[in-house]
Length: 137
Image (cartoon, rainbow, N blue to C red):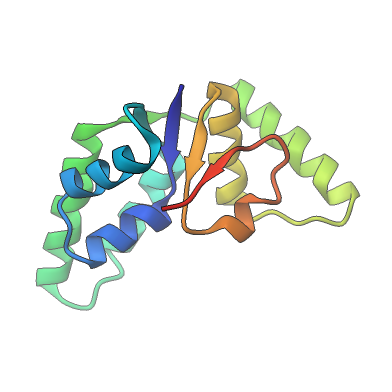
């Protein structure tokens, strides 16, 4: 078993100026000794955040954090199986009037496909995905 890390956990750690290792230790304290990984969608979200900074110092700090994170954990790609799973979940939920943000849908589908949980501070969005197990710090 493992966990997919949502950007909300990582952004909160980076804003506290935690190191990647401090963030991963905090996750391990809650989740136990488990594999921590990212969806490629989270890599997009974190990279986006690098280029939204207002100062060069903030940009460099975020870029360093993201690069260190990408070296520390596996990053799972979006595959055809995950895309089909996401499409099924989205279609079923929309038929019940439940809307799911597209990035969260893809992150959640990645976790379900792998048999992983999602670690997030954004419980509200991810709770809309049936079968997804969530962990918050």
